[in-house]
Each structure stands twice: as structure tokens, then as C-alpha cells.
Image 1: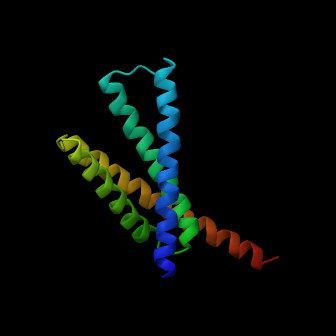
Image 2: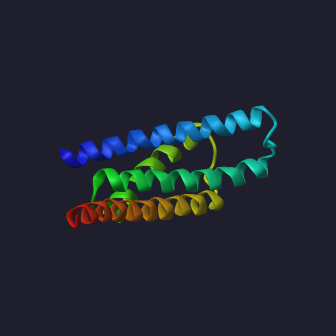
Image 3: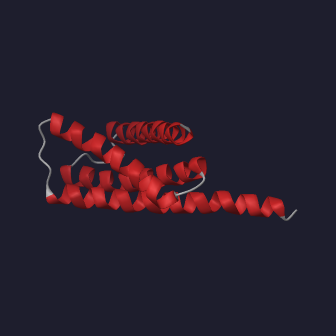
Length: 130
């Protein structure tokens, strides 16, 4: 039950991070700070997605406190399944570059989780030595 609760918290935090990044990006495009060409949007979506997946992994690793790579890989798969279902419901096709992007997202969320778990254990060990 504790694992499901921490996983649900991680997914809610990740959706909140996605909403923040989407809002900021939309405001920048609307105000003309970023051009809205198709290639630029795709490039920015990869960069923003990788950063947000890394932050999701980092926060999730700190929240869950163990199994950083495996746990966040599973969280990443759940989020990617949601993204793929939404993409398919909007009648878009999955291309090879999409699978590359999803692979990058899985790697960054796993790295973020690994670093997040290590940050949490460093705090605990430094407090024990005081």
C-alpha cells in the first residue's frame, strides 16, 4: 500500500511539473519569445520533456527513497503509456523519432531517480555523523 501511495504521489507531482512546463512554454510562444515553427516545437518538446522527466525522477527518488532506477523506469513507462494513448486518440501516428524521444525520456527519468535516491541517503548519513 505504501508503494502505491508513493507511486501515486510521484505521478501527481509529474503531472504538475508537466502542467507548469506546458504553461510556461505556451506563454512564451504566445508572447512571441519563441517561434512556433514545427521543427522548433519538436526540438523544444524533446528538451522540455527530458528536463521534466529528469525532475520527475529526481523528486520521485527523493519521495520513494529506494529502488531509484527500477521504480522510476516503471513510473516513466506509465507516463509514456498515457502520452502514447493520448497521441493515438488524437489520431496521430507514432514515428521512429517518437520512439527515440520516449527512450530519452526513460533514460532521463531513471537517471533522475538514481540521483534522487542518492541525495536522500546522503542527507541521512550526514545527519548520523553529527
